[in-house]
Amino acid sequence: MRDTESRYAGVEAGVGLTALLVAAARAIETHRADSLAQDAYAEHFVRAARATANWPLRPHEVPDGEANPLWGRLARYFGLRTRVLDDFLLRSVREGVRQAVILGAGLDSRAFRLDWPPGCALFEIDRAEVLAFKDNVLRDLNATPGPARTPVAADLRTDWAGALADAGHDPAAPTAWLAEGLLLYLPGAAERHLIATVDRLSPRGSTLAYEAKVGTESREVRESPIYTATKDQTGVDLLHLFDSEPRPDSAGTLTARGWSTSTRTPFDFTHQYGRGPLPEAHDALSSNRWVFATRTTR
Ligand SMILES: C[S@@+](CC[C@H](N)C(=O)[O-])C[C@H]1O[C@@H](n2cnc3c(N)ncnc32)[C@H](O)[C@@H]1O
Image (cartoon, rainbow, N blue to C red):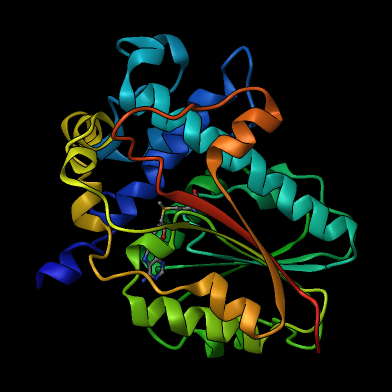
């Protein structure tokens, strides 16, 4: 297998394993006394995979507790991100949007755990292997989605709009788009194509939230505890999985195309919600941004 392809192998290796990493973090978050988000499905995904059998799923199972850079601090970051993006989707539907597309959905269970109004349609795009694993686990749990849920198998490095259209997405109706923990893994050209596609399929009133990193991380940051602990404790080498190309200015592109955008740091939300990670020296989280956009023209 070529190196770039080995990064994509299945759900128990490469970038697929990152979906399990986030699921384990959500399981831990669910059981914190001061939980920011509840995901009762997350632990079932982690338990179902062989590669993750010994990962912690409860705060008391975390070696070193809160001091653990992976299952303490990074997991709390994922818990905060989950809550902020739950709120983004719920705000979008409150404002009248009735379809959502989750790009790089992984083991996202929002179709099952959020309170969707009647008449919503939810499309989850990821690679076929990840979606097949997810559907097996959900079937065993007899899980029933609130909105009409359609998994869409596609490689987001290719032209995926046809697969979404075939699945029944309506480009004439506003869409809430979400790319959580995805763009960092895509080549720059794929991110540009993704943003152009979202723009093309979004009438006025559509919304988009995505996670990005800005700038280049220094050697000190690349050697900092979040990256080293994740590699040591799970074998997931995030720095190897992240695409190494300079990132496009997607917020700038959206603004130029008639979207209003706001770029926030995770720490803004730590203050807003009263809990979450705080900045550290040589911090792997300091270049992370969460971008929120609304289509105001067309
Ligand atoms: C870090 S996980 C995040 C999953 C989910 N959004 C969440 O936050 O729980 C990244 C996800 O992006 C998916 N992904 C990465 N590159 C992809 C590609 N080229 N095409 C489709 N999905 C991709 C992976 O399979 C994985 O499920």
